[in-house]
Image (tube, rainbow, N blue to C red; front, side, top):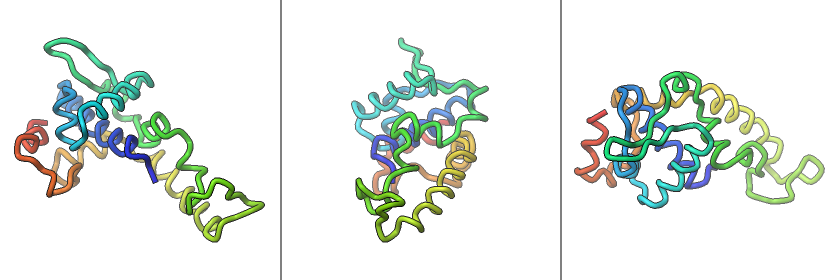
Length: 159
């Protein structure tokens, strides 16, 4: 449904929000490790989120990424998805066809319209702050168990 970049972008935003809640900045290494993403790929995603004014980036020894506290309460999943994947998730065909439309529908066209509407509602009403709280409280995870390398596991407990 989402591109791989978008999936990592959502995870990166959640980790960054968790740090930001504690008035801390998350480094590129910490974010990439916490979400099990390649460093260069993570850097490109974070650069896009900074360019779209979703996150702030500070260079230097005490630098890192953060989300302004005032934005945390309003930053929705939809904002991240739009920044990385655009509107594709709301208009694409359920079977991945390029020519699917009301005039020439795929077999799941009408059913998928309802699913997209529900998805839009969920994305627009769920905040990154909510998801970050789930991760820091232990109610939610951001990595598969098999990928939880010990050295990065501590990053999640730091926040």
